[in-house]
Amino acid sequence: MAKSGMPGPRPSGGRRNRRPYRVEFTVDDDDALARYLATRIPHKASGGRSGEVIYKELEELVRD
Image 1 (cartoon, rainbow, N blue to C red):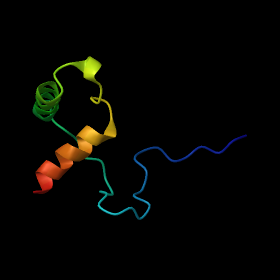
Image 2 (image 1 turned 180 degrees about the vertical axis):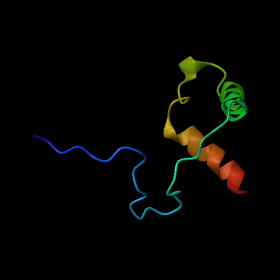
Image 3 (image 1 turned 90 degrees about the vertical axis):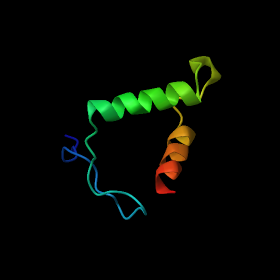
Image 4 (image 1 turned 120 degrees about the vertical axis):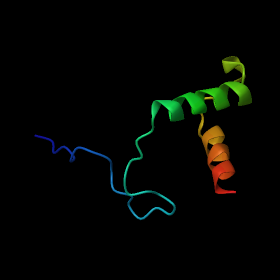
């Protein structure tokens, strides 16, 4: 029988700049993200909406 992990978010594992907890986002947060993505990359066929790069770019905007 295989062991399964504990439920819940994984510990940070010592990674830099990672929160040890999960941030719960509001419906307004989700709407704001959707608007940003639709404005920044208006056509899904252009690619990139589900990629990591756009989210890292957004994170850098918040840090500045």
